[in-house]
Amino acid sequence: MKALVGWCGIISALLFSCTKQRQVAASPQDCTEIKALSPKASSGIYLIQPPSVQTPFKVYCEMQADGGWTVFQSRSGAAVSFERNWEEYKTGFGPLNKDHWLGLKKVFSLTQNKTKKWIMRVDLWDFEGGTAFAEYKDFRLGDEKSAFKLQVGKYKGNAGDAIRGAYPGIDQNNYGFSTIDRDNDGCSPCIFGDIAVNECTSSDSGGWWYSRCGSASLNGAWHPAGDNTGWASGLHWRTWKGPAPYSAKASRMMIKSVPVDA
Image 1 (cartoon, rainbow, N blue to C red):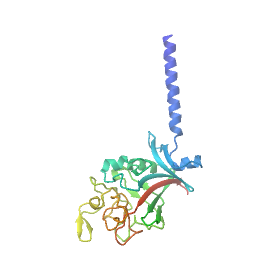
Image 2: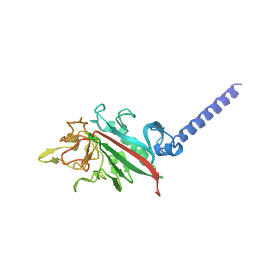
Image 3: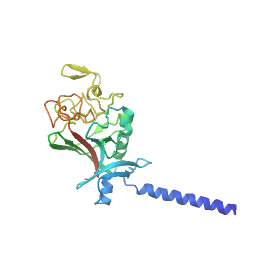
Image 4: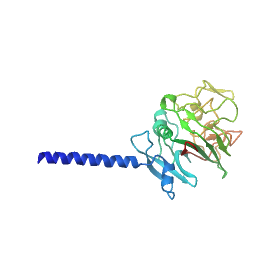
């Protein structure tokens, strides 16, 4: 009788394990896959599991006519501070359905899928009712040893290619991520007019892929209408607004997957 009970326990454990494995395997890899499987899926929070991770995690999916986009940055006000350290930018912060940063480690895990390529889209809103966007093909992040190095390909949009810079010498492509406690910005000191600062994060205040210090930086301090110009810190995309520094009303960064041969 004891032997029978023992065998029943083993069989039950195996069945549970198989069921759990099927559930994990059934988790979609990204928001693009969710939209493809359910064309009428609405925008919201979903559970995904890229192939390179063992534990599924939640993301906000922006479901649009051209596919499902995985949002990794959202800004619309001052409720969530983006003045964070390396560990916080690595793991993420903020509520997924509001202002948040998904986390460099999670974005890296998405882009490690070798069967897919990635498009990054940046959406911008100003205080005057205008909008603009920038899209980059072949988006990818390096691993933590490379400071989650940014890699982007061909640009299209109407916001300008701020990542490659408003002028020569400040291309942020292929640079690592910097935070106030982890400097990878490629210059020391950085010169703003006749002012020198030790780190780009000292002036822009939020973590980013800086390069001397660059003309794209969407994780700085949020500034309200009427007080959003002239700041070194802010939500900057300087190929879109200028010449004086203009801090945007809102921003969103997101990625979607496409087949490798697309």
